[in-house]
Length: 198
Image (cartoon, rainbow, N blue to C red; front, side, top):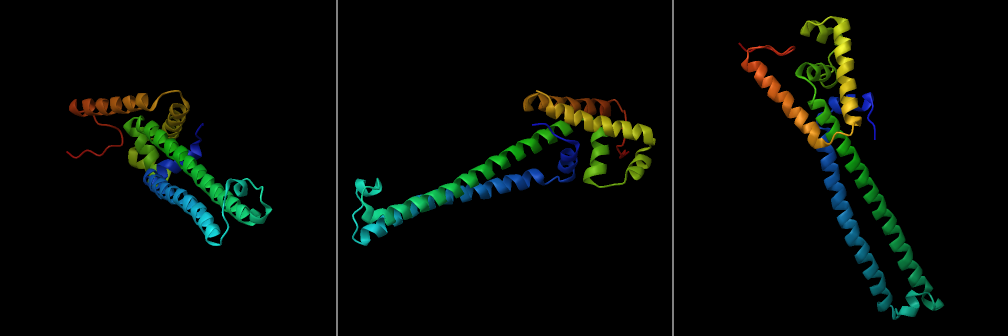
């Protein structure tokens, strides 16, 4: 599944998105577990109540050969069908959440592979919601260069996301960038957009 610029902006602008998706998954898993238990108990209760009413549920009743007990069979069948449809709906919701979480994790990892300046530009624009004019001025970048860097950063995230790179390969790219930044700091080089503490 390809990712769009709009989705990337949304993911950058919502830092707690991954955690909220995980919480939704946990709640949905609990619902699925409860629903599965409910399905079993409803079936047992319907059969139990039919037996209490003096109707013996035999194989011929469950196979609809005895018209006297069709009401009981129909009730059991309908209850099971409704419960199963609901259960299936919960499972589908869970798989959608899994896909969304995978998308967010991959997009964030691709974002993390960017150089420090590119991440800073995108974070300030979409997470911090700062005006581009302010970011340009604050970072000391002219408008044309700023737009070029912003577009290239966004293009790079989309390209890496849509590539065949595995999460592991993306992770290695992220770690290499951190190693390069540590090397630059050790050599006394400033990283654009970074405030010096000394």
